[in-house]
Image 1 (cartoon, helix red, strand yellow):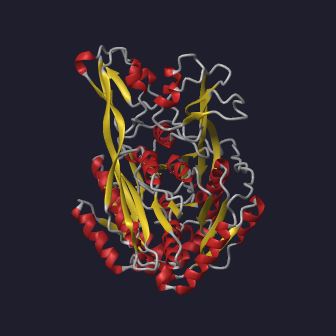
Image 2 (cartoon, rainbow, N blue to C red; image 1 turned 60 degrees about the horizontal axis):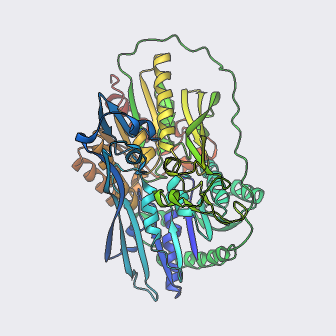
Image 3 (tube, rainbow, N blue to C red; image 1 turned 180 degrees about the horizontal axis):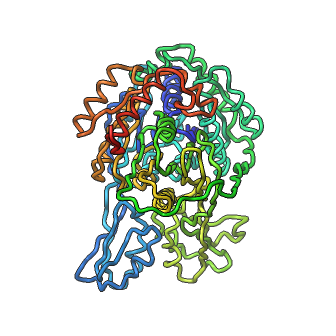
Length: 616
């Protein structure tokens, strides 16, 4: 059995559910294997304390230039669908952070001047002897993508190589709906989607449900931090035909135990029994019918309500990216409040596969555009000779022998659209011209007016690739708006993780604000984001959300920030008023109550001087 635990939104309790379910099942004698496929920010190991006995490098093939053989013709650059190669004055430049290791450039080079060589993008670590002093210790495997690398799906595939067909395999996926999540969910028997009963949770749950349904996996929902008022989730679940498998109560003691790295199923026996009951319902979904994919909520485009200001020269436009590493730390909550307090700025929501900022800013959309993120490829079975060269050449294991009804004869091949990265190598290697290509609309991008200024944002299509390209499009439009309307700053809400969309969000910005929380996972992920900021040479400052949740972890955050050449510039306490504000669709500042509100005002006083260079 393969159960993938996922969530559209980060920080909903996905890891909490996965590790505690593994423990509960193993403690009862079930044969279990826990696979952490959140390779950008793996956290499961912090709770199960494995002793790794096996480490494997994950390698892809990346091109290197042989200068003496290159004639500067530029065919490699023309063929690359990822803009990872440029030819300037006859010299080939390869941008490794954009390269997808597809092999097209080396194939089309007429001089053989590009050679593919193994390149490590991450590691897989395994404790196959078993974690936990329990009746049935369970093997644990996780992957770790190197900082600055974008090819998370390749590491996910290697983690899934450790699936045990005789065990209950619990796969912890990354948040969102883009390619790493697709790779984690593919081939699963059941997808369990963990959400929370807030407008954010519902918005991102809809995306995650559509992803699982598009892949064709039976799906159920677990509501975390349930306070008994989760009608919005129940109504949606009933409407889409996806069952709620269970609920985990909203208790501060659960959050405090989590912050210390403790297993809730050990500390709170009642939760262990609840998890076992949920597993029974999960098992009942296997082989069941999969509801149809739901239509996305439409975006209404309205005429601009205000006249845009005339173009004004701005001496300097500062771009500040707010990121978190770990999802659910309160990044969007902080950005929305800063949006209200900051003047003379453009907003950009770069979290394109699970955008939430619009839920608090109530934008009026004035522009909507399709985004062509690449190409799709399809094999015509009538023209295919069945030679298999396309399948042998594909670097992404995306081409397979066709089967009825695609090809009744069974002699041709087909392309799995969910596994395909859109590189086009198959088009070049096919000897009978049996492959067709067409432009692929992978999402939409928008410009909206909010009461706090203009905003560029986007929506990546379900299970689509090239989220990094869409982020770049959003940033480009935000920069255009700042020039057109004379704004001095751009404030962006970035995605979680450290992979492709985050790289696209932070490269070239003036400052990174890291929102973290004083938990064992928050500290772990903050460290990786600090490494990312150093990798790109961008200064970073740190904000601690829910600071009083764990004083020891908060002190550790301050120490780690200083050691990395950064520092903490603000701290926000744990405050139920924040959840109340979100339920009302308001920013913390707009809600205007509680200690978190006072802390945000104090944060702004510091931030406007240090980050936005305003006078005291």
